[in-house]
Length: 108
Image (cartoon, rainbow, N blue to C red; front, side):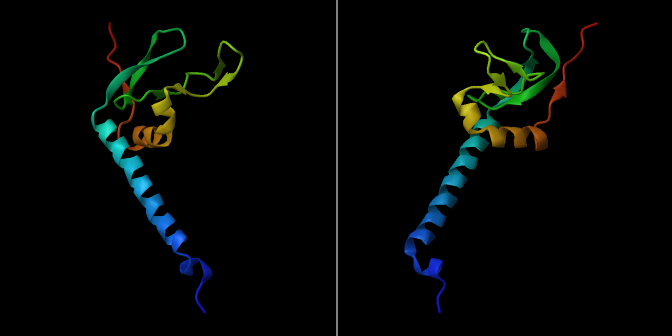
């Protein structure tokens, strides 16, 4: 007896489609990350923190120094642009594994 899912061609096609979409998602992020650069972490007051973090090209996503509230009273855990939110899982994996935060030089 054949398993039911293997006999349905749509499931097999959906697996390929999912693989292609995942490959495109990771591939596009890899291109954007290769063109990225380090930027200073800006705290809520607009003052630079003591470290800089990796920013892929055209993506902006960051965690505030403390969880706060925006102007409308909603709790803020992350802030960024639409592309940053879309690629957020890959950005944080990239920052944890490949492009770690680094300390800013101290002016004395």
